[in-house]
Length: 135
Length: 135
DNA sequence: GGTAGTAGTCACTCAGAAGTAACCTGAAAG
DNA sequence: CTTTCAGGTTACTTCTGAGTGACTACTACC
Image (cartoon, rainbow over all chains, first blue to last red):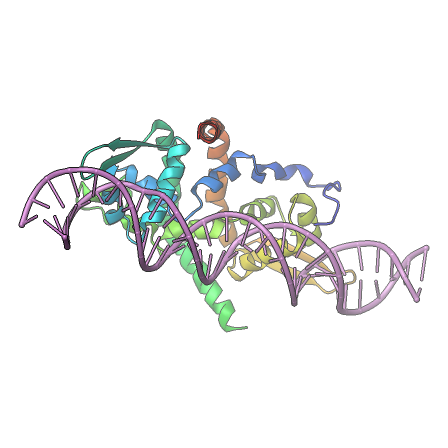
């Protein structure tokens, strides 16, 4: 990226290039939800308070490490509340905070849109395999 | 939240853990748009056909490598059409296909939601820095 | 004494995403 | 002869997300 970033351009105003800058909301949203486990954990907790083990059983393929890691991040971000009961055997409850519920909104939208437009992905996949074959 | 096709048991169906499986639309959507440059390239092309250099000037911080790489992927996926004019100096035009426009929809939604809910991210950031300080 | 049950952590590894810098093409202009 | 322009490619490095498996703590029960 050695080049000069601001040559004037006739169409300049049509795209606000800031919309995907680091600190811009859209990028911050993607940085939050665009990883392997966050959306599904959010989704899981949106169906109610869960214990650690409950979640691990419900989310197929997640390891203990990734589950804790994801939950810890959500906790420090204030999206999930963690309540530890010092009993034996230990018990910990996780639930969405109000902030967590806010973030659940766009995740739910993405899910719905994706489900309703599933054929888009099939077409993309066909294009991709077609390109792979013909090369 | 009963937005899943196979919703059956009222309790268990609140989360269908399949919604984020590899081959499920929601995950496929995230796999497509959840990276550094795809959304902004999509956004850029949504404002009209562009030349390569035009895009590089308009998207601050993108390197030639990442721009080509992103465009190539979008092309093989059938989201972007690439038209090469064999002149000197070379000229190449990129534009969204119909499929590309389809995918632009959810991206635009994310942008809008994020912009309208910017304070969510500020709260998250405050939580995060507060947690970092107190440890 | 050994095992089960819950909720974790730690050390290690690996793959892929992203960034940097150098180089290529081909004709025309200085 | 060298530079300029547009539009790239290639090799190399770095950084981070994610996965695996072993290990911990605490107490009750057999």
